[in-house]
Image (cartoon, rainbow, N blue to C red; front, side, top):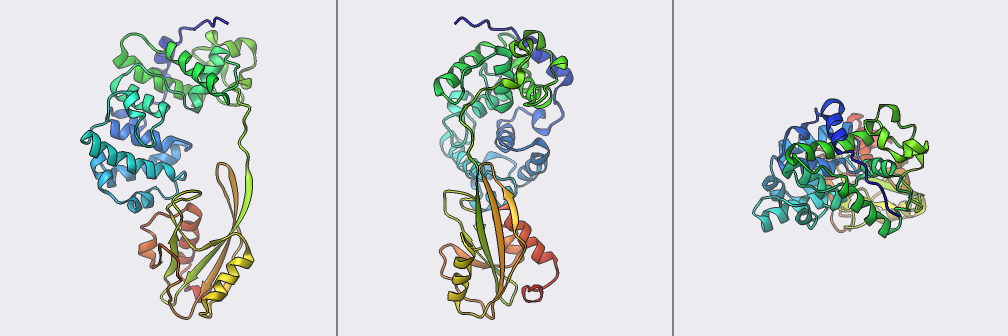
Length: 360
């Protein structure tokens, strides 16, 4: 069918200038490095969480060359606790490619940006529209929700051709004049509408600057959009962490595989059953005193993890035979990439002012 394309750009730009978010640190620059960093951090993460990480990253890595020169371990350590660690690894890979292939300069088009590691079409569009005023759309989760409601777009976005169709419509909605001013505000305005008014539940349609042009508002069913039939399948897993300490208070950590949950981060030896964890300890043969702590519940996007810490203090340090493993003092483990629950457990033990033996 022929779809009527509303003219929303002017209203979105005007609303954003007055009511949108204009105070965030990455909004005060058109430096693509800083905008790119914020966009990657903001994927799947709240603004309030990102603010501190963003500041620390810029202090440590003020430009793309500094980030490219760092080790992956340093990048993961600074990212620790922010989650979705593949973002950090791709951030590092992308920085190196920009330095090696583009002489430290970010490409100035969304098409070229999208060819870099970890930068998909929507992130490329955001960087290019914010920094270079390129007339390109974005479709992050907030914007997808706003546009499907405005358009009354009722096709299933789990189907690739329907997603492509929405991209085409999003492009038709873009501003057509004064792009240097309009494109950054339009892009930010759609993000802001999705974050503040056009929320998944109980959207504040009466306050929306484009309510009069919104098909879903007119039909009274905005919560029906967007439509995506393929649902995320969650499952639960139980893991046992063996936190093995030597008499010097050092803990044994080993690097996880390069794929899967917490890929590339350091963890205690991890097992899928209590029996296998205790059998592994018994094989070490160094008289470890063992105590099991209260389980920790940790939520990932598609997984619920029930983490069972097992504290083991041995009579002597030994090599535990694990690839990419070593004994870490507190100052050392604090400086490497650790999953958030592991860091919390280690910090709890460290700040209890007890030796592992005393806490058992």
